Image (cartoon, rainbow, N blue to C red; front, side, top):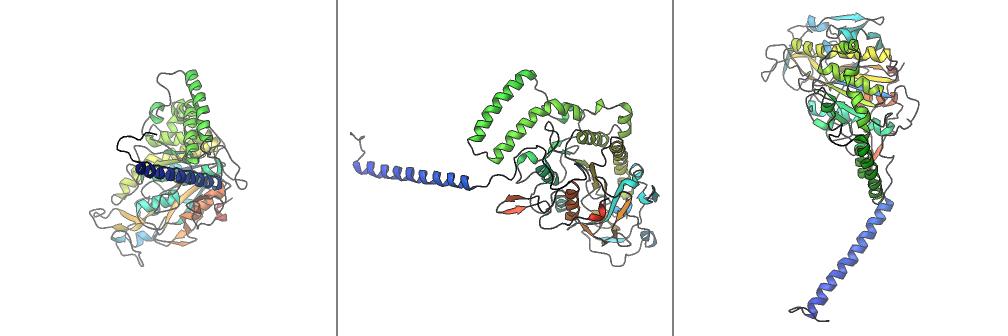
Amino acid sequence: MDLPAGFSRRDLLTRSGLGLGWLAAGGMLDGEARADAARAPAPPIATSLAARSPHFAPRARAVIHIFANGGPSHVDSFDPKPKLAEYAGREIPGALATERRTGAALPSPFRFSRHGESGLEVSDMFPSVARHADRLLVVRSMRADVPNHEPSLMLMNCGESRLVRPAAGAWVTYGLGTENQNLPGFVALCPGGYPIKGTENWRSAFLPGVFQATYVDTAKKTVTELVEHVRHPLLAVDVQRRQFELTGVLDREHLAARAHDPALEARLASMELAWRMQFEAADAFDVSREPAHVLARYGDTVHGRQMLIARRLVERGVRYVQVWHGAGQPWDSHDKIAANHRRLANESDGPIGALLDDLVGLGLLESTLVLWGGEFGRTPTVELQNGQGADGSGRDHNHHGFSVWLAGGGVKGGTVYGATDEFGFKAVEKPVHVHDLQATMLHILGLDHTKLTYRHSGRDFRLTDVHGHVIPDWLA
């Protein structure tokens, strides 16, 4: 063999030896990779939204979570504290430390009255919600971990305040799938963009991507704006179908050649869902198809439209719908609480009442759990510093005690559970941590929160981490 000019036999042996070494190493590494792939456990379930059986008989099949972003004041809404009027302008005995400096007791500017046969006390901010008093379970003894928005939002939505974890809706759809394969199983309705922490509020994190929420900007009105690319601008449906079927064959061959990689499988499932949504999303999101009297009850407002969309989604088998209120102008009333809370309540009260009316009328309330609340409550004392609340009319964040309410899903209506102290600062009777709320919600859906797990980074994760207790007293 003639060697190239300037290329000695020593050069040939040296370079060939290195090449043969790399070939051998490549073969060994490839063998190890194949062995690792063979040893790797299969995903716990198929990465699809197909409906699956719960752990035990459920009380509800769907959730509508109305998130009052920013921390609504419990002492102005569902936890009356007449003692605040007695101590108006005076220091509260045993007041707790707060995120910012607060001062004397601040009585509620709202009037509470009793409603329904249960006599449940609700402030005059929520007259439409109060009509359903006998259907509400008001939990007055909620508590979170810290008085900051970001970690408290993550705790309420994802069960973890520091690290990105799957949202509750992702866990629910992972465990149960959904009843309509032409729509997402988990939908986040949030007008005008993202709230604090953005998509972390509804991510699937380490769960397969198919369980992440589909975000919809409900500030938009038309179906083509709400669901982008819901219609192809050029191709007819029959042409699209043939393209889709061909692509599906190729995608499945690609997937099979890669040992059914979960991430790839989730992406393919999302593309298939996008195709199927063309046939049902237009109907689900088009509220103009509702009768005029229904539209009038919800109101031609952003929150009215998105509450109506939530009802239409649940009707069509969507498993988990989160409806954000106050994402742009939150319930975070550090000052002017009377005006700001009144405005926000006026935006949300009528649509929530209409939603509950419709769920009752359609026979869906018993099979749908409705949850209302924020990430924490507010102080019974007035905020003083940073130029916020300097006029003596606002409240700071309060994670020590706050309220949420639930309706439907087999919960005990017309009931108050737990209590804060006489001023509303801290949960003192039957305290309920956020993890307890999440464990009970999963129980209502037929899921054991200790068994709904996913193995990641060498350990099993769950929505409630290593915490949480189901509260039987909430169940009818």
